[in-house]
Every structure is written in structure tokens, then in C-alpha cells.
Image: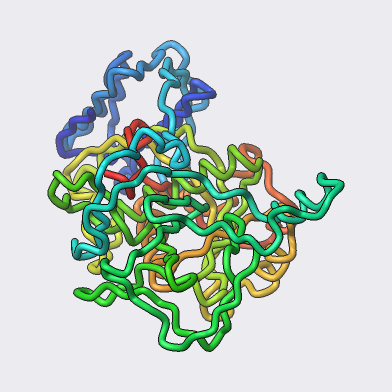
Length: 415
């Protein structure tokens, strides 16, 4: 991993697929100072009169010093330099759908926020992905006889776990803790990964954690409950609950959903909407092959967010796999026209999360955006590097990096 001493802030983004890297050295003081940059295959060192900053690269990444090119000074940002790298591209995101190997054991479901047990010692025999949306219409097109699945929604049985885009369905037996809706009748229709059951609007179907009162999911019927992946951790029953920082967990889950869906459905634009049906964030996935290595030095310009744990500390270094996105907030009537255009575009996929989590995610994006070098914070900095749809012209967009571990054995919610 990276190791650093106090000195100039250094930001290095490595693109594994392109085998290239962008190096940004922090803004020098007024009048300029002598800077000595030494690039070796496994490390990078920046010397100034104030001190020395050194980055040591992960073992799977090496620089090509002779390929340095494009040195330029960007006002307000610092020195920019491009170079080639040799990076292993074996970092793969483990599919959250392929969890059959996790079945056949007893699992315990915990509230991710406080560790409260939601379901204890549940034996999962079948862990299956739900079909994509509009699967019922496709069946009608393909079958020359009446639809055999009509009026037969996919209900999980006692030892089943059905996985959707951002949630999973489980069957709650009467002897387990089972939150029930306050008012009854529920209409059910053919389910999909996006819309399994249509509930009457007046029915209160929220599933609330008994301890911290966080919304964990919704009841779909008298036996079936939908839990959101951002709110639940599943662990083998013999293990104790392990605490994962909230913002790190949310980033990992959302980033994994984006990468998985973009690969499966060839879409790179997403709307993040709350369980109330309102759009909160528009996301455009740029790439998922970045490795970001950074030394913050003694920078005092990093924006603090007291509601989030501090994952970036001053005088520290870090290296993480990143999913890079552009985002637009849609709260307080912002970007209404753009949001409406995206919602009517069938090529754009929606992810539904609890409304409070959508606001958390927006705060995380804002925090991550504030820690980037200024030139990487808006769309205009990417002109000529990334191709955008015409609907983005004239709009100010934020860019951010989701920090996510791509070499994990299990999805974030299944620890």
C-alpha cells in the first residue's frame, strides 16, 4: 500500500484497462517553489523545501518512468503529468447474484446501522436472482399458449432468498420477528427485479429496526419481506456481528450495484430514487477500473462532514479501487427537467433505496467530491476525455469516486 510523509499533496489515478495514469501535484505556494519529482517503477517521490512526499505503489502496479509526457500547470490545481503503467487487471467484482456457495448454512440478518438481530439462524437453501423487469411481457411474446406464470408471483419459500437489483426478498415465518403492515389489503402482480408487488398507497409497509428505528425494508405480503442491501448485513450464525463504517458500506453496495447492472444491461446512467418514488440523484458511471493513490500531505482545504466518519485523515496516504461517476442532485426541485427526461428514457435504470439512505449517499458524494483536486470536480474538466450525451450540455455536474474493494469474496451485505 501507499506510505507517505508530510509534504505536497499527490493524487495518482491509474486506469487498469488503459494502462495509463494521471499524476496531479498540489498547488504550490505563491511565487512557486523548487519541486524535484523522482519517478521509479514502484514509487514516486516529490521533494520541496518544506518536505518530502513519497508514494509507494501496490505490488500489482508499476510505473514506466520513460513514458512521462504532457506536463502542464493548471491554475488552482497544480502540476499535471501523464504516464504509462503496468497494472494487473485481475480485480473483478464478485457478482452479488452468484451466491449459491453461501447457501446451505445458517445465517443471521443484522441491522447494519446498529447490529440488531433481524432474523436469527436462517438456513438458506436457495439464493436466486430475480428476473429482470418486464419479464412477464417477454413471456407473453415468446409463448404461443397462455402465460403459465400469470397470477403466480414469485414468492420465496421458507429457506429461499431472492435477490433483486438493490434488495432481497425473504420469507418470514410466524415464529420469527415479523413486522406487519398497519393496514391490510395488498394487491400483488407479477414480480420483476424492480417491481415485485404493487401495494395500496395507504398501507404502511415499512420494516423498522426495533433498536435504532432505521427503515430496513418493506413488507410485500403476509409472509414476504423486502430488505434493502444498504441496510442489512448477513453473516454466518457462528460469527459475531462485525462493525463496518456506514459510509464505506453504502458506497460498496451502491458501487457494486452500478457495476453489476452496467455489465448485465449495458447501461451507464442511473437514477437513485427513494422508496417514496422521488428521484434524489442522477448518476452516470464513467469507469470502474480506476486505482486511486493519494497522499494528502498537510492540506487544510479538505471539507469536513461531521455526520460521516473521517475516512481521509490529514498527513495520511491511501490507495483504493474506485468506481468513478458523475452525479446531479435532484433535491429541493433541482434539475427537474433533466430528472424528468431521465425518468422517461427507457435506457436509464432506476435503483430504489430508503429515502434517508438516498440523502446519505448524496452527502457521501459531496464529501468525496470535495476531497478531489479541483480540476476533477466538474464535467468541464473531462471534455475530450469522456463522451457525454447532449442533455448534459450547459449543466454543471459533479464527479466523485466511490471507494470500493473489488477483490472481496462476498458482496458487502454478505460478510
